[in-house]
Length: 180
Length: 180
DNA sequence: CCGTTGTTTTGAATTACTCAAAATAAGGGC
DNA sequence: GCCCTTATTTTGAGTAATTCAAAACAACGG
Image (cartoon, rainbow over all chains, first blue to last red; front, side):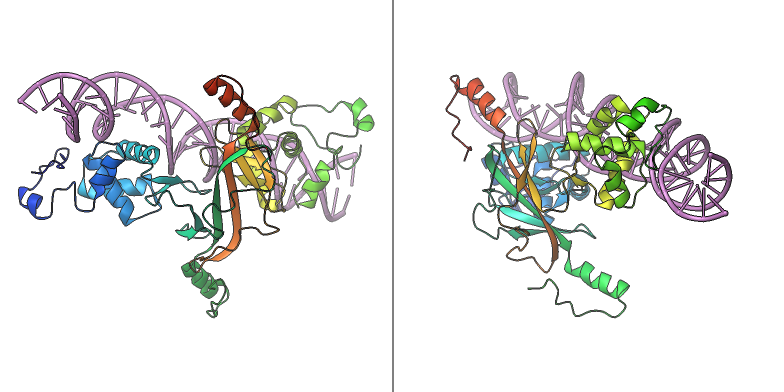
């Protein structure tokens, strides 16, 4: 057993896979990043981090569901706790688009923004249009010491554009709308 | 009595003031804007609209408290209902900064943004730095048809800058930080 | 292998908001 | 000025997302 093994609560680790596929802990450098963030490496944390890698822009609840499949004993509160720890440690970022529960993503540190579909809620990353620190200098900051700027774009995702077109207009339309 | 009189639920309108100061309904053109938006003019709506004029960036709860002082019978749900109607009708705008309850403001239609104090939660309006439709064109919109862009700046308000400086640094500092 | 200290579980509470039915009142018509 | 229709508000619950706290548990350094 390597030093990176992690006990799964109530679940015995199959020893066969332990050396072949590497212990649950390793595999992607997940444990490394957790440890590098100054946090203890635990099964719930690994599971959440992996789930987050698989499905960015997930709610706590969605992650909870994902985590439950490989780590059945995990509680929702644990997921909230893990996400809070990740967010504090800079391992994850929390975004809260209007009208949605909080979403989490691993992509962190770079200044990127989000576009949200007003119809289905799908979220995609959008790289900053202007540069490293985008709209970070408002015209008049009213004396505030500005630390960050957060941009949320709202619009229709490609799929919803198509669905709306066929549903409302009848004949499918040419879809050269927001395609650029 | 003019045509714009509004019955206050359970409260009789003092007739003396009715002709002198104009009925509760008028005074600021509040009723006019409500009616112009296609909504019926009611006492709760007038009260909420006035409260919103006095204190922009207020939560539903704060408005509820404000409204209660001149219109005691008003329910919180009514305030939510009024705000929903206003928002739908374009009379008010709802913003939802991360970590805060929804805030409402009358300023609507112009494309302006907000700066939020990370310490005390104070919100101020920020006019768009770039023009009419600001960061509205992301570099790569991933096929989305972009309809709107919403910018939230985060930083320290002037008051909190001072407080933090005196608390943490000891001697008050020169405060030429984010002053522009 | 053990102890310390950070994590997770368990159980419950809270905040912000929404839903639905019955009571009420605004505003147009007579 | 009064009545009717229909929008609005009240009243009474209910829900989703998140947070709090105490006790059980486990990571990791020694």
